[in-house]
Image (cartoon, rainbow over the protein chains, first blue to last red):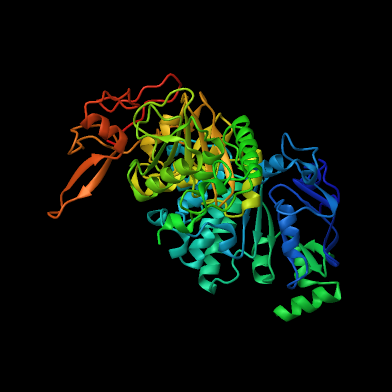
Length: 273
Length: 311
């Protein structure tokens, strides 16, 4: 009878999350609208290839967090860095407006719940996707067409409709155009704001499939905001639970959803079940 | 009772209709506009005895520039004899004592709506263009304060989106007028609703161009010998309207910008849009050199590629 050694003879590699620095590091984000505190001291680290879910009820500060991470708004207090060559050591909130816009266009993609926020409804779908490259300085029509086609194909958009305006498309297709637009510049960070809310269940499933496939194939780093715990469970590795502008609980998805500790999280999980 | 009995005496108005403060304001803004080519300078736009949208921007600039020795030409869609042009010309003459002409080469101040004359304008001449919408970013960025930020950052990528849409839908640039152009490598401007045919005429032009929007209260300028590049993609060059095969029915001229005159039987005949130039041709008055030659080619000292006609 052999005794199995309790220690491996060869030391294991350090876990990936310890070996690599986080791609996204946000510290002490605080945002006030007038006297209303929208977010208080929220910190967040996202590692490369990781999907972090943010859950919480309406008004909990989820969308504010995403707007800050997308550099659409500035916080009152807070530091935000991305681990990307050239901007590694810079606080993105302290960048000049022009550079900040450059970072936003090149390195961050976003999909909004409401396609009207993210798309020009009367321009062609391919034009919506090409816009990102245009802003980044691409001036070759052939390159723009090819890039728009690739990006739309990646988000499983039917290419025979690539020159239809989003106005005439269904909700699911509009989300796919948004996704293609977000992916057009192959950003380091993808932000998803309730990407499937408002779609019917079968369409929701196919869009989630696409997202999951893209995440696996491209090893994408994603921050996903949703109040739908099903979506969170499908996609997210880790979860932040927000309430009243604060993070009340954080941890691995299974841990949070199966064994919630904070009373609010317990309430949330049971409400779902 | 006639209109002239109802109005005040000529002596009741200050020279050039506008009061001294208004003229000083306009001249100062014009100087600033010339100093920053293509930049939209806000100015205090005055009320005039014509309605906003009928050329008040251009008229104010003309009235601020005009002197008793000036020779003024006013054109509307290329024509000297349209109602609007005739009214403006008469008004300017009455208020300043300036003489008027229909000859492009004799005019010192040339106020125009929608056209730049066919004959090459010379140093010392001033072209005043009436502008309905000075903001080139409006179609892609309706928020005017955000548009101002984009101008400040020279962040013009979105401007190509409109061109992209045209190429996707029509395989060529089809914008009929007001083709956005980069001035002096810095600011993008709306060159007022001149046809694409006229846009290259602004590049390295010898004359001064002042563009003024009375309702929007913005003035901008293309100083003499300034680069003006129509926007284009690297692989799809800027194109002008195709005028080949169009012959003026009265003068027999070809390869100039034509007005299309639909006929009863569904066909169309053409006549020169520039009526001053047509007048010279009709009366054998030896017109000056034109921007486009008899074959429709366009020459430049600058680096602008010759316009390409759609195949």
